[in-house]
Image 1 (cartoon, rainbow, N blue to C red):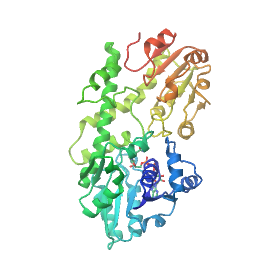
Image 2: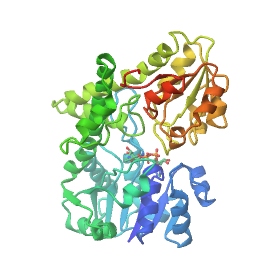
Image 3: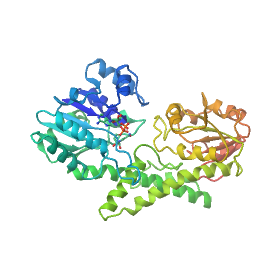
Image 4: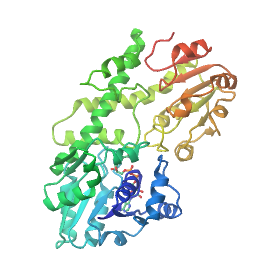
Length: 436
Ligand SMILES: NC(=O)c1ccc[n+]([C@@H]2O[C@H](COP(=O)([O-])OP(=O)(O)OC[C@H]3O[C@@H](n4cnc5c(N)ncnc54)[C@H](O)[C@@H]3O)[C@@H](O)[C@H]2O)c1
């Protein structure tokens, strides 16, 4: 099959490269000329494990192409994917669909022969109807079907998630479109991946329902962690104790500084807007949005309290800036709430992240960046772990203690054991676990 991917960001680039690896011929389009130039030069615009090799191999095999010109890609495509951003609209939190609609107009003018237009971007219920109307209006003679095919990949594990997904959701009732979608994902049928054909509106809602449910799980365990701190219980054991129940499941039950990233914050907010617009509020998600925003802010207070209630003139060594490990994505990262609050309280922040420092430098002022974790801790009055990168799980704790002015550790990801840290002479604070 010939595929055009409109938008070559996290989702477009990973999906495009994986479809090419399945054997399809894929052209990834992006308006950002510098991104396309870097891809032509073999430089990945994002950090995602394994992506560089996957792209390089498929470019070499002449199955994967990059361009800024949509017309080069669309005319002979069997399927055109829309994988552009749908950020929160400034002011009201609705999903900003302007990129999706602009892409739809552009596609409409260029399609030839029967073409399946697939919305991979996360879009509110009814967006497919609007995309269809735009295409019909712009090109009344076009032969096309608009399909919803939400993407569930996680940054940091995106290639595995795309190639070995838990399920594929396809929203369409058009039989020709079903055939094209089945052919595109055929390698996954062979692995018996469940594929769910639904109506377009149901498919659009499945994506939001999935992200909102996961956000509920995270927020639930975060609130349990707060309660654990008050009553002297251990949230990690609570997680295990409930997660072993097959009805609950063990995943997404790690207490931490609040969810961030490019999806959960904007998608939970957009779902509440859709629900309110339709007079059917999802109050549990309204609460999750509010609790999570407050939690990210409260983390700075937790750090300040652990450092004796005042950080004026103190230095804090921060490990981890990205919203989670294995990505350089800083969108809505908890560090964006925590670090400016520490600086505003008078602290000097020295930070290290294996991949996200450049991105962070565009978003926050006043941070001193270090070359490695130990350099960030040198002469600091505390170490704060914000992101759970594997390399922070295995720090040389003797070296950490030598580097710090005072052996204070605030671990917002619970990656160390309280008893062990105490034995080693650290003043250790974590999330939802009793001090020993
Ligand atoms: N990032 C994730 O982990 C993830 C996971 C699942 C779903 N999603 C959803 O996928 C969508 C894309 O997310 P992302 O993180 O890849 O976004 P992104 O911001 O990384 O990439 C979007 C890209 O689209 C390009 N673009 C915008 N309009 C264009 C146009 N008309 N023609 C060509 N290129 C255009 C932009 O230049 C940008 O490079 C969003 O709706 C998001 O919610 C994201």
